[in-house]
Amino acid sequence: MMGAGKTTVGKELARRHKVRFADCDHEIVARTGVSIPTIFEIEGEAGFRRRETQMIDELTRESDIVIATGGGVVTTPANRALMHERGIVIYLNVPPQILYERTRHDRNRPLLQVDDPRQRIIDLHHQRDPLYREVADLVVDGGRGNPGTMVRLVEAALQHFHKSPCKP
Image (cartoon, rainbow, N blue to C red; front, top):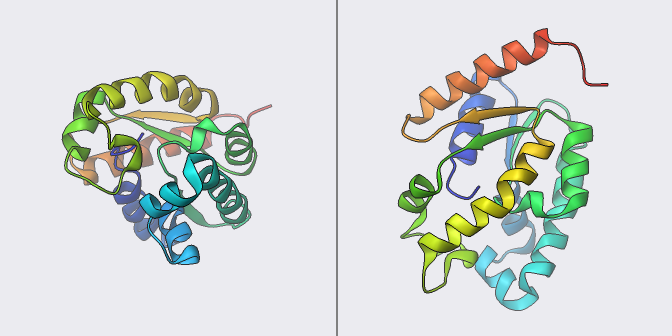
């Protein structure tokens, strides 16, 4: 979900494990030369989602990489399939109220430029949570902890995950 801490946690996780970090949204901005809100304005959400799928396809072909996706990445079935097939998917599950607190002043989130952003976050969480859970190998509940705590929770979950048998 937007505001869950994917970029912050992902950067730290990659740094600690000495692998490359990529933020899907930042990669799209670097490639297009324009902001996410501008892409939404010109191409709409559907155009942005097409670009996002192309970037997810490209990034998930790399090994030794931690990828932070945009919050809506799971709304596209192709993205869920690519992530599930090519990597370990970690869902940072953060309650909607905390997501709202973290994102309420951020103007770079086109889906929150509505009359009631708090309700929009609740609605998006309700829509996306089952999709995240469908694709996630690991669910890490977050919220009030600092990024270091979240990274440690992710590392602990990954350590346990690697001891488990592989998925069928």
